[in-house]
Image 1 (cartoon, rainbow, N blue to C red):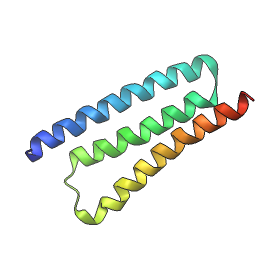
Image 2 (image 1 turned 180 degrees about the vertical axis):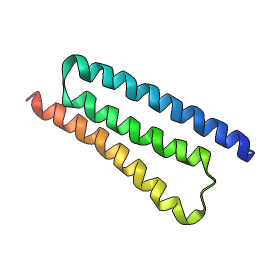
Image 3 (image 1 turned 180 degrees about the horizontal axis):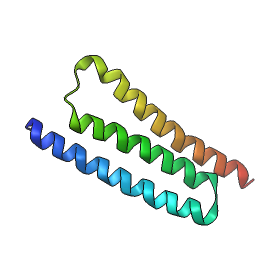
Image 4 (image 1 turned 135 degrees about the vertical axis):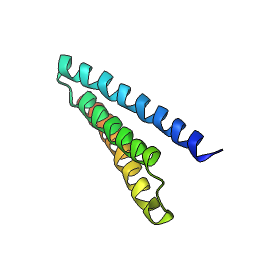
Length: 89
C-alpha cells in the first residue's frame, strides 16, 4: 500500500470516528447519561489520533504515543460499560 493510500484510509477512519463522536454527543445532550459522554470523548480521542497519523508521517519513535492514545480510547469505553452495568444493579 502506498503512503498516499494509507493516509487516505486513515483520514476515512478519522472521519468515521468523528461522526460517531457527534452521534454520541447528540444522545448525551438528550439524556445527560455519562455513558454517552464517555463514548463521545473516546471517539474524539480516536478521531484526533488517527487524523494526526494520516496527516504526518510519524517515525517509529512516536509509535508508543499512538498506542497510548488507543489505550485511552479503549479504557474510556470499558469505563463507560462498567459504570453503566454498575448503575443497573
